[in-house]
Length: 351
Ligand code: GDP
Ligand code: MG
Image (cartoon, rainbow, N blue to C red):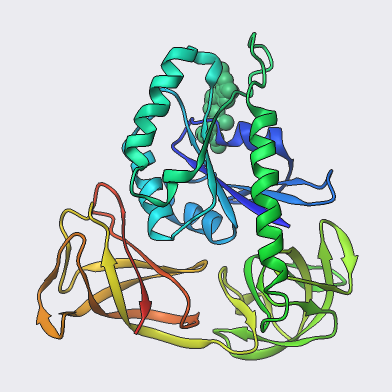
């Protein structure tokens, strides 16, 4: 299964594109569009509440294997810059740039825009992404131009993603929870993504950071009951042994996770983080779909204590948070600062 984030600025045609590519499913601050028509399944995740909500884009990206960045022909806004920074910080190697609303522009203008985009993305993970210009306007003379080309690119990347997923089926299972509810007669149902490994019905698995065991009663993928499913699947799981109030978005089903609320993280600041990071600053920490504001208690650069980490610099931040977070040593922590023009400021891993 290939999970594809659709991101970009407001009014960039994200939702129109999602509805063209799949059938609308789960809808909260992200909207899922499913395409089950092929042997290979696709799920599109529209970061609907972004740019207002950072959580929306972080959720969409963390649930996805690739991204589509939507930009209109005259839409190179600061928010697009922020999307590029987020993709670069998270090391999103696979994706496509969609120049949307191609019916509102001219071929020459779009070609010039492609050149501009090349300059903007040079040196970032996006520099080798394919660029496709398209529209979803059924009344335009060139109605749906580019949609087939986009699908072709998605299917090509999807084949690589699928192959990579199969190499992870034997790893210890890890499922991230993005939605959950109580269903009369069934109990707790969670929706989420198998990040790695394979899960089976009747597995007993840990719920983190709660740190208790739950039973997997049933598994559904694309509304079909299955006995087991592997890496990359979007799933609905019937769970036994927990209460709805014990759950939060971002919690993990896994057999081994670290749990902490304070962290020491080796961080590299984005070169666009103008103000840097100072002692006592409050940053928004994201790991997977969990988030928490954390306070900077100590900054160390090359073994020396400092009161500031500058743009582009790498150092160790000691951070104090307010709630338990489940994570693993390989997880990428993403930081945002609401005072910055480009709010995503840094990434790092636990030291
Ligand atoms: P979002 O805010 O990024 O989700 O953008 P929407 O998909 O909601 O689109 C914003 C507006 O642009 C809506 O009024 C759409 O009807 C319109 N729109 C979206 N795609 C196209 C397109 O390809 N061509 C034209 N002409 N209008 C579009
Ligand atoms: Mg929308």
